[in-house]
Length: 490
Image 1 (cartoon, helix red, strand yellow):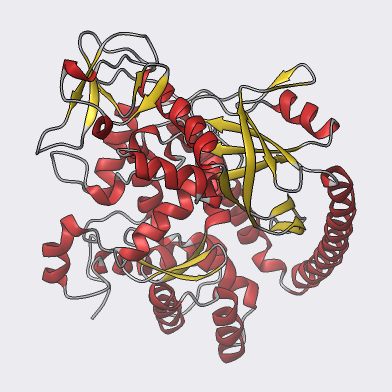
Image 2 (cartoon, rainbow, N blue to C red):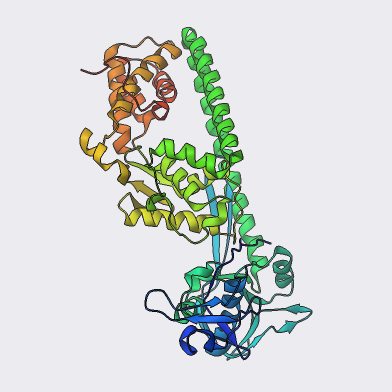
């Protein structure tokens, strides 16, 4: 069971008066409101000024659970009063990573989205030794078990019990407590926001999962067979190249060792980042993003739903995502699934609800889209269309345009020369310059390096794998942001 972090707040959105939840607009101002905190029972004052949003405040010391309890009780009261809700479709999705490292999923819809009108909503109702936040009875007599998630999500054992009894049950997610500053906002969130509803159980859900699991198994097995065939072909091709070019063998072995060492260094860096405290993480990210002194820029401190799923403050993981996938990388396509896999190695992901990490990352990228940094290409895919942070606009203008870090690209040619020596190909300057141009194009076109390798191989009569090896070892991202020691370009 996941528990959200509670922090004392003087603001309580709703008060308890004579056993009923009320909003500030329904009572007199100040102590005359005659309301108490639903969390601790202490007296409240109704604050109805001209500057701030109307709210209640503790008359004395604030408690830790007042706001959460207020939202929870008022949400149930809204259900009992309104007696209607918009529910999403009931669907089952199973996902797994196939042999190629791709996320594969299968989905089926069990019931369509619907607007339900209840004839009765019983609060704190008991059903077969279980107690629900509410039980709604529809006009057809169908009963819905309803849970309101504010602080504690429904635990796995309870979900399993609901499934075993084949009850129709769902959970309304209201964990972003402080987003509800008015009764109308909460009413909409409870009754007219199907994206906040998560189905817990539904008749036939188990059978559907079994069917989808079999379908997903066949997809994964097909991918495994294809991967095995591809690996066998690669092995045959590699063996033929080794036999035909024994001189390159030593260089390839060195390159393979270097790749292994690079992977080990990456894993070590991820472990060190995960183990560091937030202050150390922020210092690292500030240096990487060249952040100015002062408050964290709004670009990397966006209040998104589920932002606490990564076990760190939202400014930390958003700065890290912006650094790795947007900042100074030029035009390229990115997949949210790939980013989440990368984040799993750097953060302790503890989702408030099943999809909260995906929701948080999706919402952040939609914010970046509105801010002009990325463009949604469909599904989980986005294209970076601007890689310059606002705090570096003046520097960008000084170097003129998209390639705002030309020193990195100049450094890339030096990396190609070093990679050439590592592979032992001893290529001419002209060929290296063609490879350099290809690397520069990668910053804007997101082309495939192997396409360039085949083209250059045909042009110069050299093995495509030689070019691929050089491109792989000439890691542009590792170039320092400082001028090269000697002029590399005319």
